[in-house]
Length: 314
Image (cartoon, rainbow, N blue to C red; front, side):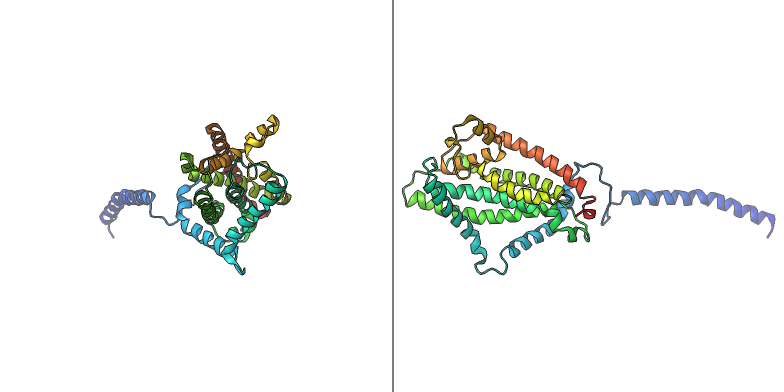
């Protein structure tokens, strides 16, 4: 090959090299702009961060967990879903005997079955959500260690599945309510504040979710807290106006403690709107709402911190 041919080939390589580099740059830029990835793994930047879009993408999993909770709740039982009605009815009958008959605690002129059943429906929903959510990490450790999905899906599914149980028990309350209104001539009448029922239930769910994920995060390392929570929930009911109205409390110190309880304003607003008795306070509801917001923020921080390494300690 002569010298002129070699010189010409060298010139051709020199001119094509920038074109190759330019084409590679274009490919890289186009890949960077491509959003058609099936999974994008990013580091968690903040303990406050929640990817709501990712949680929404896993809504099918949430629906499956809800169905699992409903189906397995009374599986292999004789009465099955009838326990949704038997439990509140038996509890109401016991309260009527103990607190209404023996202790003679007044109910603000409301028929005892209505008063106790109203408190039981709201309290039972909160207690069920709290107890089940507080066991999130320990009850699902095997699932968490094998499959990735947003961990908050599990406590959210617990809150929603218990909402179905609440709806069934509230339907029972409505039947008893209609009986006393139309058949017994009771003066019980709802008012416009009854329309706040969805808001009050959402506040109960938020409060239970906040406390639940905090306790669930700590019980991965400290198992004693699970026993403490069970004991604490039972005591908390007596510090909440479930079996008595706030109007019966005359001691100012005890009344102040009742007002500190974030559940007091929620249950009193429910009874005031549905039964037309008790007290209603926007200030108490605002306090409860602020308490729930702070609690949820704290719970999310603790939950996000623990979920990174809980599988090593659970």
